[in-house]
Length: 459
Image (cartoon, rainbow, N blue to C red):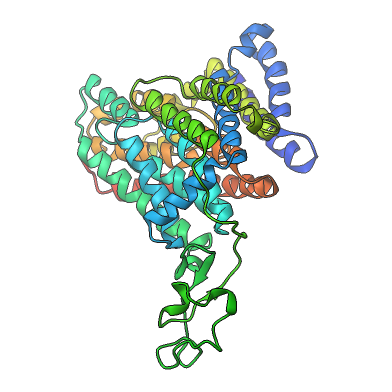
């Protein structure tokens, strides 16, 4: 049995054991890397630890620490109120606002994990406030990041278009961007339907709770039966909801204690969050360390708002993601990824080979860096792309989409950020749903993108 196949089987065993037994998967993956690395690669401990994703560790810790501070001192509540006002209280539009904002950030050059790191905590607080599924909110943020991720000036787009140009392949940056955008918008619609978006339709927040404006004819408050003092609850007479011609029925919503003011601590935190966005998006600073710098500065300037922020860091998620990525990095050093790519290139049927490469891109990207996968797999596909038996433009689009939409996996940076920022009591649920959705994308996205872009022979 080859060393590459052994490494794949060990990874499968890690998932199996962690599923059957109450063993933390991240810890198990670290143990596997510690055992397999020295045995198959003759590596010492320093070499094994070289695959530990220190950058991802800092991102997860720094971002969740900063937004824990923002949550504790009420900055997030203030942002929630302002964002709801921007959509005039339409709760169903809030996930789409998060989708659009994240997509806009990545389209103008933000690294996908950085954009998700900025928007996911805010989106999750919207979800908690308005009883929106955190899975729905998290997936809309992730899909939004992927939607803008392949614009000609984005990081993913620049990588793919650069590899295409260096290998003298035909390319179409506009088609790549628009195809990814449309694919992710369609995914967003599917996510909205599957994870409770329809129940949000008609709900509005007019300033004192979430209201449902759906109405059946003839009931109090309908056009046939306008509201009266007798049918209007005493605590709601005179407000905007009770003076409309449509009855409004209060549904579950967290209690309000009045409007949130922008006090000194919240202003400092808000400026820190804006500073994080500017530093990352404009000056290309590291999102993790920048978030830590801002968090420490906020803690020093606002000492009363940091009592439980450190404990709010999602340490189990940090261990889980870092453990898996450490093992996958060992697989990359072993040559497992290259071994898979070379095996696919030897397949006699070009269309089948194209589909297999899309599957490899999706499978590996679900655990590792999408940026690295895009830079590695497109060159592996060059030989049969140059042969002209498969359309280069369609193949590149299919591979790009397959490798990016699986970022919803909780082992990918974007998925991990969503899990880390999910409410404590729903974090396990979010992890399981993202795991299910992410691996369904590993199976579905390559097939769909292959059928749509490769089989017709684009380019």
